[in-house]
Length: 75
Image 1 (cartoon, rainbow, N blue to C red):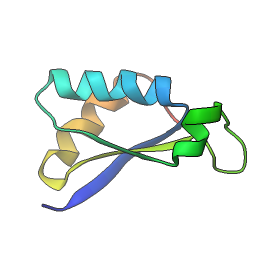
Image 2 (image 1 turned 120 degrees about the vertical axis):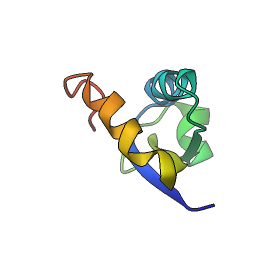
Image 3 (image 1 turned 180 degrees about the vertical axis):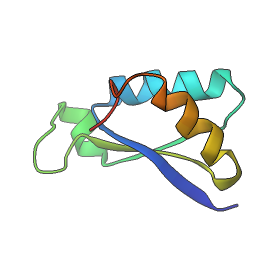
Image 4 (image 1 turned 135 degrees about the vertical axis):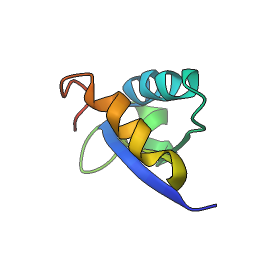
């Protein structure tokens, strides 16, 4: 199954909010991040960056759902 990144944010908390929203619509989500950023709460030099990845077949609907936030989740 091919995965695509539909959003990139800084901070695991925001990523989990977006993940919950997508999952509430039945879209499976994988969060990709460096563990050191989460462990120490860093958002510096790429640490703390979280990629929100989903199966490619859900990409269109996920982007539509995320665009309804008026850009609030953009990195």
